[in-house]
Image 1 (cartoon, rainbow, N blue to C red):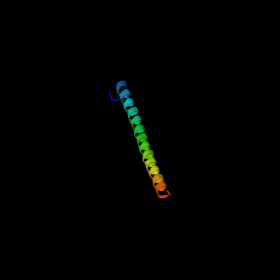
Image 2 (spheres, helix red, strand yellow):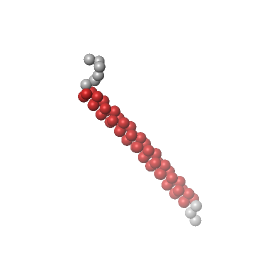
Image 3 (cartoon, rainbow, N blue to C red):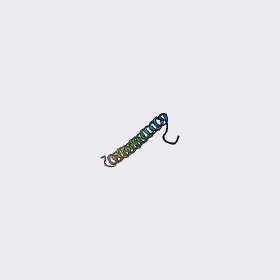
Image 4 (tube, rainbow, N blue to C red):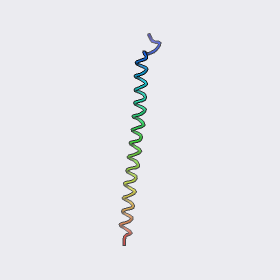
Length: 56
């Protein structure tokens, strides 16, 4: 009985592993999006501050 799992268990484990891998990839993409968004907001803010301070 200890020689192997039934095929249904293998398929379920494989599906779970693929789901976790996709979830990890999606989470990483969300963090990258957030990082780029925050960088962009700060960049625009610094450009606006520069423009206001150097306006004549």
